Image 1: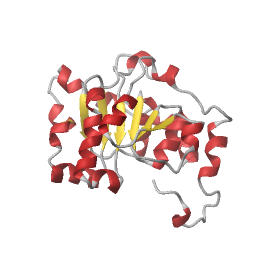
Image 2: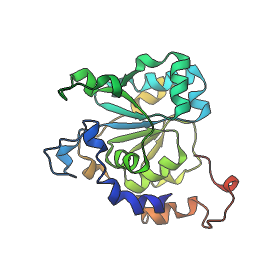
Image 3: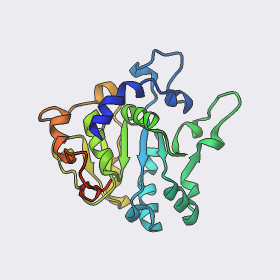
Image 4: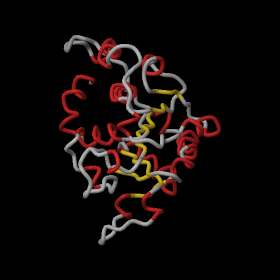
Length: 226
C-alpha cells in the first residue's frame, strides 16, 4: 500500500479533482499552498461505525463544529451511503450534486458542511488525501497513508492495529463519542505544505514497512483489516 502511494503520488498531483470540487483556484499555480482551500477528508466504512444509527449519528454530530468552518469531503462507500438513507441522516450532508450552479458560483453554505461524494478513483482520492488539512477515518490503511504523507489524521475508533501511526506518526485516536471527540477535529491554519511532517523516527517507509506482509504471496487473512 505504501509502495503504491509513493509510486503514484506524483500522478495524483495532476488530478483535476480539487478544481472540480471548487477547492483549488484554477488561476493559481498548481501546487501553490495559497491555491487550495482548507478542507477535511472523511471516510467511514466499518460496520461498527456505520451499521448502528446511534454510533453513525454520534460521529456526524461530533463533526458539526468542524463542518461550520470548512468543507468536509466525504467519499462514501456504497454501504455507507445506503445506511445514510436507511437511518435518515441526509440532513447532515450537502450533496455535491445539488450544490452545483450553472455559473459556478457557490454560497457560503455551499462552501462548508459535509459534502457527500461518490467513491473516488485511486488517483483522485490520493490527491484529496495528500492535500487535506485533516483526514478523519476509520480505515487502518488510511492511518498508514496519512502518516506517510505527513497529513494530520483523526481515527474514529476506540483503538488501532497501527499503533505506530500514533506513537511515531500523525494519527490520534478519538473514539466515536461526540462529547469526547469534538476537540480532536481541528484544521491547522497554516498551509498543507507547512503542516506536512514525516514520522519522528526514520523515513515513512522504514516506520511503516513492517506493517504489511513482505511477501506478495501472503494470504489475505494475514493482512490487517482496513
